[in-house]
Image (cartoon, rainbow, N blue to C red; front, side):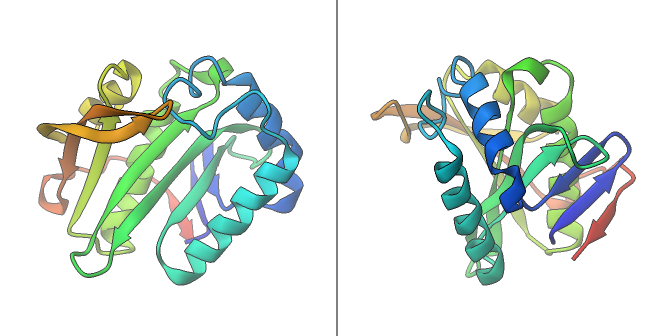
Length: 189
């Protein structure tokens, strides 16, 4: 999977030409995204972006992660990122992660992009389970998990590292039999 196109949105693999834009979006989002994700910092630059893109390409080739930029439908304006990662081939499940640039938050972008990935992950990749693991206090990401009807399974102690400190995290799950897709989209391999 390299691209998912839906009305109003395009999830696609990052391209080298996206590096400057990606770096600017990350720096814009330090106050909100950076609070929860250590890679989002004020010194993030285009070289960091290109390194990330190379890691994403390698993981996609290996089938160990499918990371996407969330773009406007024409594929030009970067709205955030989302991915299926931490894939366990042995147990056939993955983690679902998402973030939205600060200037675009509160518009349903995370919920829609996450829903597209959930559907593609179950239909295209055949996962048995997806997990959404959210640091305690990250209310925006917890709201997305709830909108997806993910089931809260537990509050896991020391589950994530935030700012170099272990924190508790809510572990949510999605199963294929519970998923009710209502989205129209096109997946390009």
